Structures are given as structure tokens and as C-alpha cells.
Amino acid sequence: MMLDLERPPSAIPTTGASLPTRLRRLRRTPSLRALVRETRLHPAMLVAPLFVRPGVGVREPIASMPGQARLSADLAADEAARLAELGVGGVILFGLPETKDALGSGASDDAGMVQDAFRRIRALELPLVTIADTCLCEYTDHGHCGPLAADGSVDNDAALVRLAEVAVSQARSGADIVAPSAMIDGQVGAIRTALDAADFEGTPIMAYASKHASAFYGPFREAADSAPAFGDRRGYQMDPANGREAVREMTLDVAEGADILLVKPALPGLDLIAAARARFDVPIAAYQVSGEYAMLAAAAERGWLNGRRAMTEAVTAIVRAGAGIVITYAAADIAMWLRDER
Ligand code: PBG
Image 1 (spheres, helix red, strand yellow):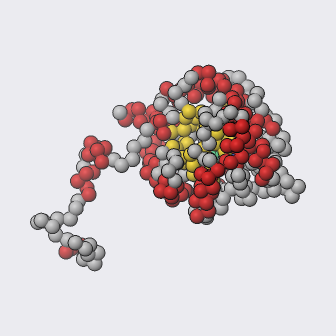
Image 2 (cartoon, rainbow, N blue to C red; image 1 turned 45 degrees about the vertical axis):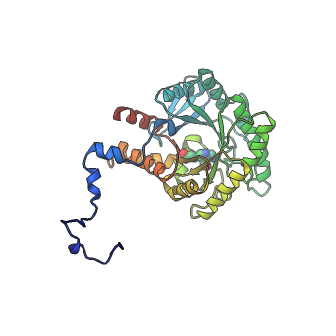
Image 3 (spheres, rainbow, N blue to C red; image 1 turned 90 degrees about the horizontal axis):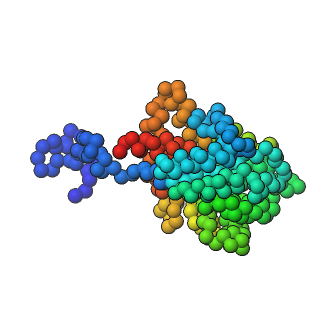
């Protein structure tokens, strides 16, 4: 039977054999809703970002990200243990070095704080995946994601050499996965080649494949003190207006050997998460970034929305769109909420 969209509502029969479907039937009780729920969150699909700073026993709250803190490596390991206990699937580590230079040398220092944290976490043998954010912007004095060329732009091929060194150092210290986030052309291939040459054939690459030059990274840059000293990242991160280009980025990253594709930011990129899920048969991850978290946390603090419900709804939407892995600053909270829902 053809749907007659022209028929006025008054003509819809309310009794008899041709009753219209009433979708409310399956929404009547909590048990019915649970039975037909299409998307469920599980702590194992969540990844918590951790900011690692120098020192011992230091915990420094981040003002723009309520509930988040910069942690020394020892406390980062404690936090990883707490997350594993909650069943959270993984942690992704970012380094906040005291000293920076033009090449971002600290990022590939085997004695660096992120490397130290990976070794400490590995020693705990936790049932959780450790991921390294592979980038240079937190370690360069100019705040860009690679060394600069004479004209002040990021030197693509010099960046590839550095990123490969960083990834190998991270793998050596115990990172289970490396996640290049610099949006330097060829970074996945360069890192794969370097990892293989260093006997890390078994280390997967989670590629930040579709990464927009987004305003939503603001609180992260404050937390990591990684805002560019001049200019911006639009010369290498993607224009948020572009979706077809995002698919080209993903296609290239798969061809270069990406094991997991990541879309970032998440909520402003739901269309890209869905496109990635439809086109590529690799796991799809999404990063609910600092600004996405801060918006909800700030509104919740003011009593403008219910933080728990809004955060759960946002992360559920990201999963509904097609992400099987979600990096979120709310990972521990969500894991706890899921626990008391049982
Ligand atoms: C490093 C990196 C950034 C984020 C993840 N990896 C910063 C940036 O690109 O400026 C942002 C994460 C967030 O906002 O939560 N390149």
C-alpha cells in the first residue's frame, strides 16, 4: 500500500483493522524501552584522556575542564588503575613538558613523562589499552604540530621524521596503540614504516584521520599550553566545512595502514562518523573533545541542564552515529553511572 501523505490527520482511522502503527506502545515502561533500545554504552568502549605533567605526587586541576587534572606520572598510573577497575577500555596520554624547543624534542625522549607513565602503567598489568597521542604541538616552543620551514609554515616532511621518532619511543615505553593527531600528510605511512623497522609490527595505529581545525579544542590548549604562538592550524587541520575531504583523508589513512579511524570533534562530526562507519570496515573511533565536554560541564554547573543526562545523550548519539570507540573526558563518570544503573 502506498503511503498517502496528503491525507489529512482527521481522516486517519482510530478504530478498526487499518489502525495506524502507534510507536508509543514500545515506550510505555522502562522495561519495554530497555528491551527495544538500539544503542547501549559499555565502559569497555570508552577511552579516558590523561594529561601527564612532570613531578611526583602532583595533581593540578584544570579550570576549564571541571573534574580533570594534570597528573604526574605516578598519579596517572593510579588513575589508570582506577579506570581499569571501573571497566573503562583505555587511556590516551598527553604530555605537558616543562621545557619546549623548535623540534619538540621532548616528545621522543625515552625518559619523558609520558614514556614514564606508560612504563608505570604497563608494570601494573591492567586490563586496559594504553594509547599514545602522537603529536608535537605540546612539545614545540612555537606550538605547531611539526618543525617549521623558513616561511613559518609546518615543514611536512621534517614533521614526518619527528612523528615517526615519537611513535617509536612511545611504543618502546609500552604504548599499546599510537594515535597520530598532527594532520601531517603521510604520517600514518611514515609511522607504520618506522614501527615495523623497530620491531613494533604488532603496534596498531589509530589515525586521527578526520580532524577539523575546530574551536572546540580551546580548553585542551589551555590545559596543555599548546596554543600556537602565532597563526593557527588551518594550514594542516581540515576546514570544518568539508566532509568529502574528510572521506579522502580517511581513504588515504586506510591505504597507509591505519588500523582504526578516528573522527574529531565528535558531536559536530556525526555525519562523518556515519560516513566512516558506512564506508570502511575498520573500527571507528570518535573524540568528544575538550570543548564538547566543557560546554556540558559548564551548563550543568549553572544548573542549566542535567549534566549526567546531557553527557549520556551526547555520547550515546556519537555511538548511534557509528562510533564503536569514544574518547571522552567523562569516561569514568559514565562508567560509574552505568554501574549504578545495573
Ligand atoms: C594534539 C591534539 C589536540 C587535541 C588532541 N590532540 C590539540 C589540537 O589539535 O589543537 C585536542 C583534544 C581536545 O580538545 O580534547 N594535536
